[in-house]
Image 1 (cartoon, chains in turn yellow, purple, red, orange):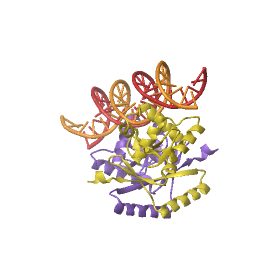
Image 2 (image 1 turned 60 degrees about the horizontal axis):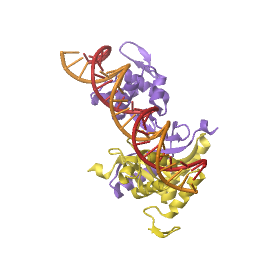
Image 3 (image 1 turned 90 degrees about the vertical axis):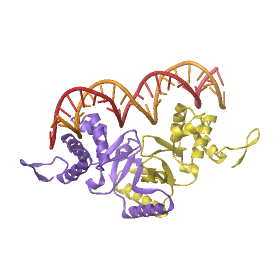
Length: 161
Length: 161
DNA sequence: ATTTATGCAAATCGTTTGCAAACCT
DNA sequence: AGGTTTGCAAACGATTTGCATAAAT
């Protein structure tokens, strides 16, 4: 955990390093918004989770997160590219820190039984193939691909038993 | 379009061939359900669309499809594996005939601007890579992968202009 | 001081469900 | 007759929004 020098005193960042908070603050400012303490709490809850979580999970994890503000701030953070919205197999939207902030490109294991979502990394072969597919599409169709999403659907370890 | 011999007279199947309807009927019967005329209309609307469509689009396409019954029948057809539910980037669930019934494995181009979804086929290299990834996962994690979902996110031709 | 952020409570809207009538075998 | 299916209207529930207060600069 990184030691941080603030205006007053050195203290520990509880979960989200300043390396992450600084660029987040910049992006928010560019959108005319502020990195408030509430938004920090939200980012910390997301970092703590380390996987795509529902608003319910976030709120349960930190009671200082009110529902409406949580939704609003997740939408805001999504807009500025800090948070990604993930759809599982159930009715709940899930959110996670964008890859740029977690450090690695990954995909999702979606449990069709309980709806939970876990991260995993694909082989370079897969990624290369996907990149090729995108290039090919750029020529063939009028579709302009900007990102991709590869999910494996199945049954998670806890639902298998 | 295939010519079909019924009990009375030869006629054209409006969109869904008997080749599709027969196995659908079988699957429904196995679930203690029937292939009713209303369900035929729904299947025909889905076949006519040829891409993932919302319930709103289905109902607009054929006014004989009431909303509640459409939802119920889509859920039923999904349960028996005839229809797949697809999530785009908006709040609308989209439905299409399962690959088994359309004939080819495909993936989706999701427009982040308008939410529309189109089908496309990936290279064998991509599919091979995905298959490998699934095998690797089966060993590494407790996750049992049963299907995969590869979507390209971007901007569709009509939203680009 | 003025703009932005918060949080409660109410509204929204895609989807689901209760129930009585219609249908099929 | 005994089951399934339908369709209207009402209910549901995750998410969004109005608005008055609090915070930040």
